[in-house]
Image (tube, rainbow, N blue to C red; front, side):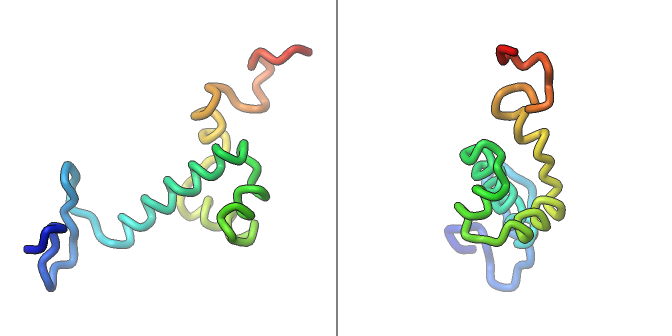
Amino acid sequence: MSKFGVTAGQRKVVLPGSTPKTLPEIMANYERIIIIQALQINDCSRSRTAASLGIDRRHLYRRMAILNIDLKVVTMGRSGRTKDDPYRGDPQ
């Protein structure tokens, strides 16, 4: 076994503190994290997020759908409320 926990011929990787996952699952998880962080940095603007990631906006939309990234959940993760929430504390 190598220092990374992978032996030649194995199909699954065992990461410390996790259950075995396939490489596509691990890659999808990291891609999801990267997209969510980029959305948060860009105030959930998908156009700016796509530009910052160097991908086409349509590709970002497709990846968000495939990876089950909901923009409302990302928005709530940042401020606790969505942009459409009338009680978010903004002056009227």
